Image (cartoon, rainbow, N blue to C red):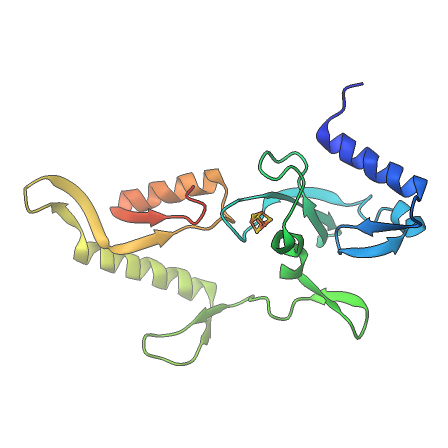
Length: 203
Ligand code: SF4
């Protein structure tokens, strides 16, 4: 019988729980041991699987967010991803904490209060952050990019060679971006004349 890697992992998990070899199993989403009977209920059985990329480092491991009623309830490694084949390191295993954290006082998960949900702006030479709207931030970014680009764009270098570039701006991408997003971003930056473009996964 031919079986996919994902199918094998699912089958192994169910078989392990049913056998109850140790009486306790390891539940990878929360990194906590739970009784085998609870494990058999499979908390993710009704969840929608949404594939994503771990944002922490340049390895770019594939992860799956398990979503129930619009809420991410668990995150695990993507067994079909060619880089990590279902595994996640300790940082990747904590991805769920970006969204929600365990509250020891209530023994429930709650939204991570440290998650940024608003635009914060610190003016040059200022020591404090101001809350701004997205409309303000996007207009301000566009204005400054155009102003800087127009003031520093060079068509030809000192030898008369056409270069069409600005060295006054740089762009740093993120491992949270996928190939397609990076492709569009690089097109945008090149069209502006940027030559200092990088991404910590070098995509
Ligand atoms: S799971 Fe670990 S190794 Fe993989 S991308 Fe995330 S931080 Fe990097």
